[in-house]
Amino acid sequence: MAAAAVGGILLASVTLYAVLGGADLGGGLWDLLAGGDRRGRAPRALIEESITPVWEANHVWLIFDLVIFWTAFPHAFAAVMTTAALPLWLAVAGIVLRGAGFAFREELSRLPQQRAAGATFAFSSLLTPFFMGTVVGAIASGQIPANGHASLSAWTSATSLLTGLLFVAACSYLAAVYLVGEAARRGDRRLQDYFTRRAQAAAIVTGALSLAALAELHTSNPALFSRLTGRALPLVIIAGLSGLAVLTLLTASRLSGIRVLAGLSVAAVIWGWGVAQYPELLPGTTMTLTDTGTPHATLIAIIWLSAAAILIVGPAYAVLFSLQGRQVLQASDAGARFHAQPGSRGGGDRRTGRLTRLTRGDLRQWRRPASPQRTEVRRPRPTGTGHGQIHDP
Image 1 (spheres, rainbow, N blue to C red):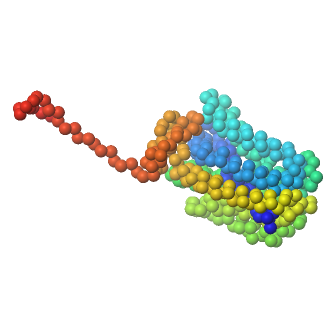
Image 2: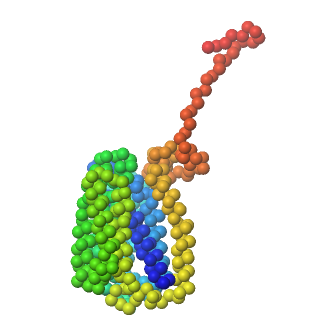
């Protein structure tokens, strides 16, 4: 029971990273395809302003995943990290290069250097989800042996490559849907239509790759395919219906709830995979959730620590996304102070992206509209003395 609970926590944190961090990664694809400097300026600006406040925070869930996997299921962790070492290192390199490109693009002054940093950010944003997907595909197709040895064929099979492409498509789908909502919130109809077309295309591509990966799984792992179309079928149906609902709402320009539905479609796929694979940790081996090699007391400790982590991180995330939704964390002109009005663009340095420190008075003023300024009426200045003084007008 404890092992199953820890497995659920691991799957939940994977879902959070996919839905939140995946959207950030998908923004890199749209940055790459935005076009030249002039044509792509507005889409890139929206992508940058949407990602900047949250992109580092979303990696919390990746770290959480790795720590739980390593602590609760050490034998399976060792097998995966050994067999799929190369794609995992490439995914990590993508995360590092992506962050460096994103940060230094605004620091560099020469156009060729800015373009190189932007290209690094964009291509690394594709590199990371693709190689993460190949590892998941290797696990799902039963290519990770229990003894764990480096293998090129384990993560280059058709299932692994299709899953890698599916990860890239899903990230771009989430990013485009989120950016549609961001553009609509800012009242920018042109960018809303721009990202609506891309969200529709990404949704179709993601759906097609999902069906292709499912068909390929029928050959590579018939047992998992049988459970996906059996006990996990309700989740597969939810994923498909959510995707269709997003497409329909985008076509009708009804944006209410599309972000939730897009996240639900991706989450349903992840949980469908988890339900279908349960209780196996590594298909094709004898490793199961109950055969973890971890003492029961350690699993109980992980459950309690995970609950404590959610209580600490959850409110912080809620505040972060609330401020981001109100555009309080956006940078304005260089050196400008935060102006405390709802809907303001915030304060800080646009070149570096650093935010000015907000005082308690700033936040108090932001929470309520500023009172109108009083106009002082200057009294006439008397001249002279005594009863016969003369007043200047």
